[in-house]
Length: 259
Image: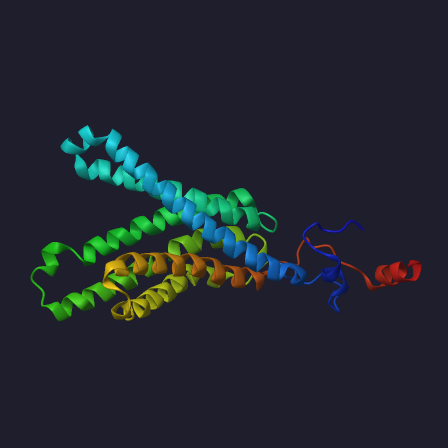
């Protein structure tokens, strides 16, 4: 029998009593290395995507500066979306390099890119609506804090769009992955809590470097968490038994006798 290239000899030796291969998307022998690679790929995609998007937006604003004068809001939205789109494609591409061994590279890249674009646009729309200056200027300071918390919650919940589009790709191969739709929101809630905890330590950071250290630390935490949690989740996904090759006990015994 020809072996699936995604499954090692360890996976075959761990055949279940039903005669089917282990229903893990990432074989046990590959999980540790996949975890490290996926986290690093996410980190690289986050950094390079962020740099590329900032570079693109700066250059577009310079080139299109005459147009900004007449319709600044429209041109600003266009440049922002182009920057987000470039970031999303680069971020998804680097993750897809690892995911492509187990799922469709192109579908994952497309779904993740579109998911980030929709997520960030919806999140920004909610943030602008909740934290509208026309509303905040009439509120006392304690209510402003409440509205800021509501804005963060709405922002994180918008990540469901990212999870939904990724789930549409994952569900083609795995079972019981409905929870993936809510995974990105959970990730961003975790990031929000860690960033908040980090802000509590700002008094211990020299003021001259405080802003830069807090920003870089926040970005670093975000990139690592965006890699670590999905990597763990992917390692626990189980593939659908339909269409998977089976190994009968008789054939495996026959091979062992021949050996």
